[in-house]
Image (cartoon, rainbow, N blue to C red; front, side, top):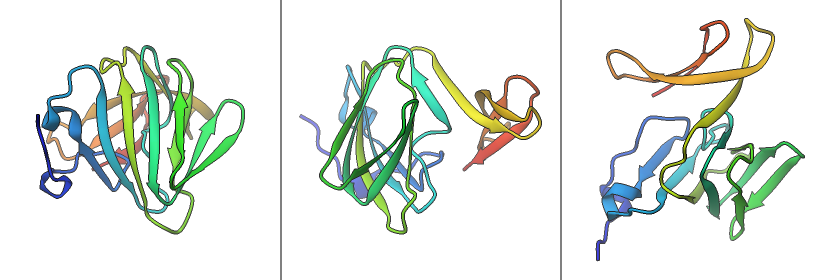
Amino acid sequence: MRKVRLDDLDSRMGPADRSLPLTDALGVTDAALNVYELAPGDSFAYGFHAHENQEEIFYVLEGTVTFRTLDDDVEVGAGEVVRFAPGEFQRGVNRGDERVRALAVGAPQDAGDTEILRECPECGGETTHDLELADDRSEIRAVCEECGMVTGRFD
């Protein structure tokens, strides 16, 4: 058995105000487990994305998250759970004024390839993006695969 206090964990860089990686802290081997805190405007993900092999489950503890899907936007509030199948595009954003807290579970742990779509002003639309760590490790950058423009910086 392993037990951790969330306040003892360091937040990871990314699009969320606070991203706590529980997978390694708890020794989880078959799933990815994270707790997120989103300030207004923050997101769980770097863009509209789909994992090749991984299903994702989000349990919203506080606040309301709006998930973009291929079909429509879906609001998920405190006490609600949502599941996305492998290959299903989604992106959860806090569009409200209150902070969001949520538990995310992804299984299997190895998501396979992840396709990330973001708006690229240079290309004039939504394009596929790669993520890269800055040489000085100060930020993660979202980079358009078509033109090389950096469309997002996350620290």
